Image (cartoon, rainbow, N blue to C red; front, side, top):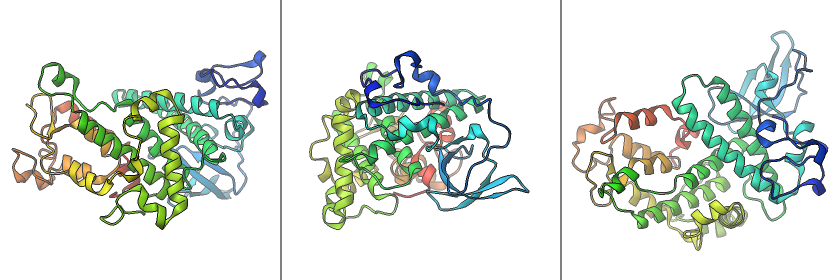
Length: 383
């Protein structure tokens, strides 16, 4: 993955979504620039100095690990690194295809440009490509090469967001890069699949378009991401701290960051985002996250599936696929039937492999089991 080098602001064309901004004689399509790095000139001895900050590909991680090089063991040929998010130490050989170093000259334009139009358009393209790869990985057993490509695209998207985040009047987060990348991808998933009804059921007149529920869920998702990307995992939403506005007194800086995030992604980032979020962004800082969360997982909110006639207040399982990203309580209530969903006996609480998924089809069960992108899985938190 080789972003443009030796470019200037004058060469940048913010309307061009398919080109990195190189001189006219050397413009390469973004699809080529974002392919796996081909560094034939590199020897097998890939030397990374101590204190270097970099993204590391680790197959067990859903999102790129951002870490600092602490030490190199010449005998074992292993680097000791510190994970920025967890502060844990781990060892890695740091093969060149498994590493992205933001300070590398080939990423200079992406990490230093102040051309906001180019940054926004390129970031949107990358987030769309990341989602496409993820969807393909779910249906393809031989996807090791795609996971590596996904890592490079995620790392590049993360660098672009952190560059935007560093620009004047655009500071939105002081959390770790891995954390920010995960929330950004979660927001894009919501934007791309924001329609909260099942098309098959809608066309057979089994389920109407539930605009009120759709609007409520979009508000909850967008406001929660705006709060979390500012406060991290430690901040708890309680009966006394119910909204983003609660930060205005407790922590004015984080409140300003959250408001910047809301404004940027609902109005400035991309037309698709603006269209999706325009019905919900006004007054979102006062949206009651505490009450809404409990209402969304209430007993009457039974999930639907394609062979079921809808019940009052029901949501389709796809809704949970989006919103369980934001709270483990959605996963617990839906997958394990903690709230004893309508018409289903309490023994579903036994957490057995056969009773965990009331109302789901076999295909839906596989998706639930195989997809590990949910934030409750990534960060192991009970938001």
